[in-house]
Amino acid sequence: MNYDAIVIGAGNGGLVAALTLQKSGKKVLLLESHNVPGGLATSFVRGRFEFEACLQELTNYGTKDEKGTLQQVFEELGVADKIDFVDIPNVIHIVTLDTEEEYILPTGINNFIEQMEYYVPNSKTSMEQFFALSQEITEAMDYIYTAKDELDMQFLKEKYSNFLVCSSYSVNKVLDTLKMPKKAQEILTSYWFYLGASTNDLSFVHYATFIYSLVVEHPVIASKRSHEISLTLFEEFSNCGGTSKFLATVNKIIVEKNQVTGVITSDNEYFYAPTIIANVSPNTVYGKLIDPKCVPRRARQLVNARIIGGRSVTLYLGLNKSPNDLGLKEYSYFIYHTLDNKKEYERMKQLKGDNMVGIVLNNAISDASPKGTTILYLTTTIFSDNFDLIVNKNNYFDLKDAFIENMIEVFEEATKINIKDSIEELELATPETFARYTSNPAGSFYGYLNKKCDNLLPRLLNAENENYISGLYFVGGYAHRSIGPSASYMSGYDIAKKILKEEKKEEVNNETKN
Image 1 (cartoon, rainbow, N blue to C red):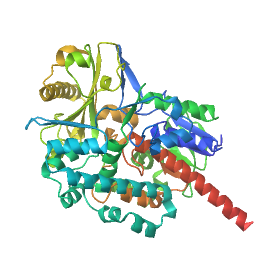
Image 2 (cartoon, rainbow, N blue to C red):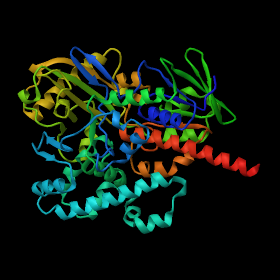
Image 3 (cartoon, one colour):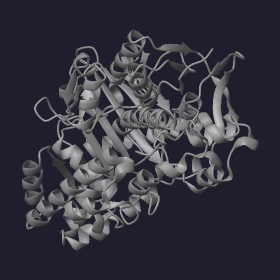
Image 4 (cartoon, helix red, strand yellow):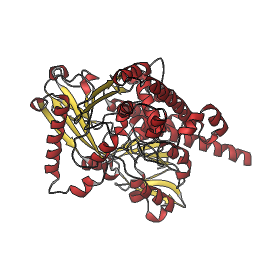
């Protein structure tokens, strides 16, 4: 059967790409290996608790009065008014084990700066400069995303000169230049956890846009969880005439003369299309789905050069007491030993599970679980191959037990709250779990590591040069927008619009020739 486009994977990026193309009049086939859409934006049930596979907090969504980019896209796709979002209280709550420090920082630039000044006197000026610079960088990045191949470098130089100066600098380099007090730097950069590199190596452009969106645009979460977003996008796709097949694993992408022509599923079904969008890692696509003879050398080189990002160990806990009864007052708990992120990054290369983010879901969504109960997520990230080197079929379950015990003890030590006696349901997902579920290499769901020259801006600017096979595109966490649910949604939108623009350009060229 023939289609205009085939989307492999109904994760965040795949759903948005499929819906955008379908709404534009294209005939789209969406293939998903699982029985539900959403990828990691899905849920599972244990007892009377429903857990998310991976929490999907959205940045760049904004408010009703000041709409962020993602909200504008959802409006264009006709789904914004069908999903209820709630604001996440506070953006940063840090607890350190060795030095016993605690910092809580709210949303809103002025509130954030005033609270930082309270914690670190004489930090106000440098924080104001930081957010002014972050705003310029965010606006510059928005312009680059929008302009794409029509980028006006002269305009960029004149309008966003500071952005160009900072574009090659690390986080630490810029903060030192702003003369931000060391303690303020440590507190501010504690949210580096999700980006997966010490701030000596992390691009300031990436970090600045990330923090700015968190503080200014108020991160949100769907009131009925991430799967509500997945189902809404999928239903809209179906209502627009889109075709989908679940439990349909793609075994092969057909390439002829460096042009994709279709796919073959595990059921030996053939589907044909000149455009294929993969919500799957390039490692999987080039390494498993395409005949090695058809994989360009440069594609192999790129995949081999990039470093796989963090791998998650997540402990899902259903507690039989409310957050108030337990004394869990905050939504998030970023737990480290110190505020030295270089040391903490090195610690997270080991299999200890003693650096983590704790999320008390009920403190954002009060009815996320039955009355008088709590859903608590504890997530630690591994930035090394140690899991693969150490774990085997003989020690896997012992290793899981050790993680569970240690993660609970660390959380209790950091919060001074006993949760062990209130555990009703418990489940642990390791990199092995996520590898089985997502087919991502090594079970990573943070995409490629953002480090030094391979960070957000170079990836965006070089995205055009990474289309090694005609008609093949990538969306999701391994694509040009890098990690995070918002980035994944936007990557699907970007690619769909790019495809439509290319087709329009080709039509005009053909008309001109005729």
